[in-house]
Image 1 (tube, one colour):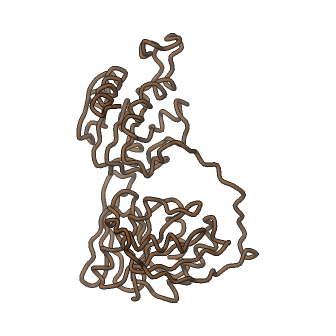
Image 2 (cartoon, rainbow, N blue to C red):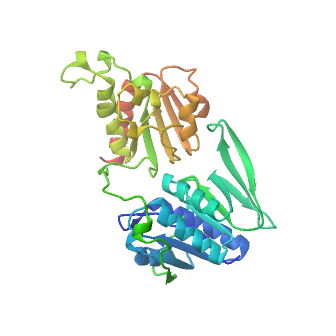
Image 3 (cartoon, rainbow, N blue to C red):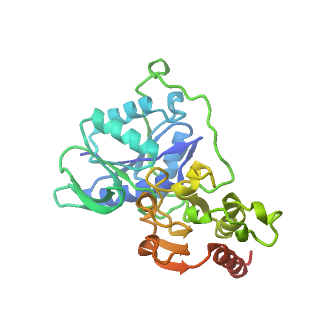
Length: 346
């Protein structure tokens, strides 16, 4: 076994901040196996990002900046990763489990007849080199353990924000080796035309703090603030905009929602947290008017601290919460926002 590989996901020539977590996991695996940690960087600006990986714990890096890899497409990425695995036989290949990473690791694992474990939230390396991982299953209702074999290459997709990156060490260097692509453009069936990217908002997956609203944001004229233009037409959408958003802005948080809230049209689906939405693991999750349906808990139960605000003292969310406030969110949240502004000097 030659090394531990950690894939650094990029977009528009820059690494995703969560990708450095892969190097944190990779360092633990590399130390346990007595192997070097190698960063894999494909796409635009690959050499520079590969060099930066040295400051985040990589011993060396393999980079390919070919034009076919500028944007993520499964065919050329999987072909290159599978070739590197076949040629070099790394012991482990690890990546932070974004949608692209899960797709890439699944394809490369299948192409190389290797094992794959996903949604990893904890792991332990055994004396024989096998790995026992902890992962949520059945929509997060239970936590299970699975073991990856001691032979061959094992692919691991870890849950975002479940692991810490290595300490950033400015000036630390990693040797960078350029590798050639496997597929030419005429061999790739898919083409990327353009991207529609939301700007000025905190990404839910990467957010350290999330403020979420649920069905409890329901329309009610009495919930309108004193300065509402027309309290008689106050809607749940206004609650997200004028009640939850100010709290999120004070905390530098992302704005989330339950499926019930997005289904009701209170807020776009891009904000949905849950089994059919985004899976998140923030340091702080503030659930406002969310009862705690199992589908929602599946997407946020690994949050480090959960705060629940709900009128119903029997709401299931309180069983998951570290702190709970029983009461009207339209009274509690503005008061909380005002106090945080005072304490934070905003």
